[in-house]
Image (cartoon, rainbow, N blue to C red; front, side):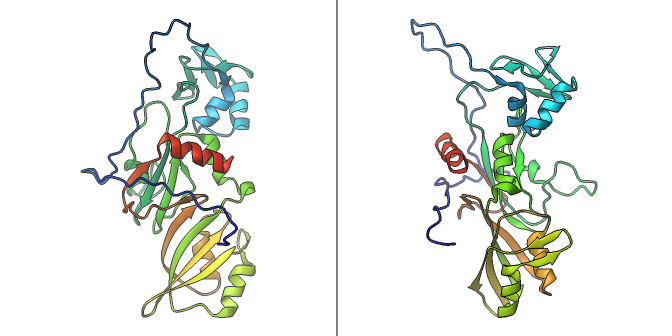
Length: 287
């Protein structure tokens, strides 16, 4: 990467291994604390548009949530909601089978980093019964973990999860061109003309693709490592690009997603949650 770019966000905390191979660091789900007994009456709760709250809960985009509300698919405190309704702490929102309770004002979303090993899927259900990354994460009460991007079954590395649909969209949508960086192992070295093809553009079945950067990282014996960076996340894109030039990837690991690096002490199968300061910094970086 060019030295002119902003330094990637590196969470400083290291995870603690739990008996089940998960990080023991957790954040309290209590939405707030009791009052301090001040003489002044409490401020009125902050409310937000209903479609915004549903999008933040990860149910879909704001436009999709507006359509859901307009179709009568959402209730607010037991009544069918309408476009323009607002909700805040204490309100009960139901969208289909999902129940959403707005958090107290000022509360930041939760963000989780997970070091995915090979042999897990990024899906909540699988007809083949394979292990899922969601089985590793702590359970949530009134929201759900949203995977920011995916990794295929045989790819390891950084996965980012959040409870905020808008943050997920900001990091995943192609128009924002968020960088993804991978470590790639192949047999042998790439010829200069192959490097040129991969960085200038090759044709895939779903459109042209190219690496923004492709750096030689060396290797031992017949194994050779490269670092590649691209600004989109199509299905198996890195593997398909190498296959298009006649090269098979023997190992693939994502080491960075946007401003977030894979923490060096985060072992495979471990997760760690960003604290409030780190989460606010991330929100500022992607704003």
